[in-house]
Length: 352
Image (cartoon, rainbow, N blue to C red; front, top):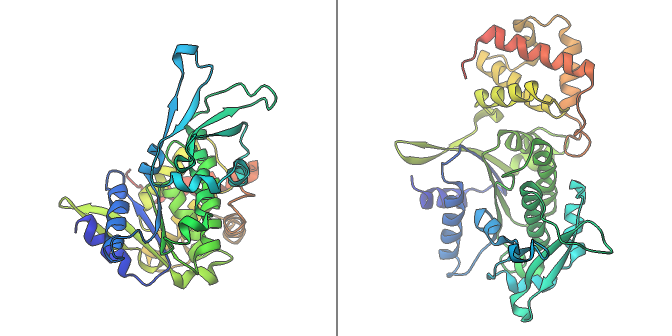
């Protein structure tokens, strides 16, 4: 299939929430554009929904003011069809979206002389009295742009007209693991606010983000409201063509990606939310073994206190990971985590 055919396939689905894991370089951004074009063609040539993708990020460009030793450095906002809606935003709207990231900076909007052109640029600073302009990091910039769009999504003049769908393409580029999972919460909030009123499509190359959203929507504490309305897919390629595959039996089977992500965390820093990935890995193995029970797999890999370990994994992977689980693992939890993971690798000799 090409991206336009897959866009049609997505549009024909009945579910309100579509979650897509996509391998790198498959063409997620092209798919979002194809979905825009297809839904416009079905809507008399008018935009049917709103989008966040690489093109959204490209609207923001640093003006370093090198002539004046960066004295007036700003983040320029290029003019686009969205500029007309900037007048509905103020600093407070974006600050509310940024709050869960605990930013270390403040900012001001610099408006264009022509109101139709909206916000011309943004000045960042630390000291609210002197307001000396600063350049924020690449990761901070990406978080800011994402929250800017989250605030725009609340502008009914825009999204109330183009109200068929949100298409969110990977708002986690250049983010560290901590902020990726905070972003998972912001996406969860967006879903909770809108999933009954419009379709929400989310694509990501990040297995952790996919796993957490998948877990929340299909198995989490509130999954009863989302489960039947959620459709997960895998976007890959075959013979040079895009392939959109179902995630069968509520199990994400790309276990090698899970293993690679967990191994990296073991070598660097382990946070409590990594228990979700470990539980999904064990569930994948259990499904492959044809039993579907975590305790059986724990027994197979040689865990001694099976009930106790299963209880720890279940408890820590079902907490509110999106806000409360950004702490590092306690020493005892880390020991259990590493022991189970090493036993899995020793038993099954995965090659990755």
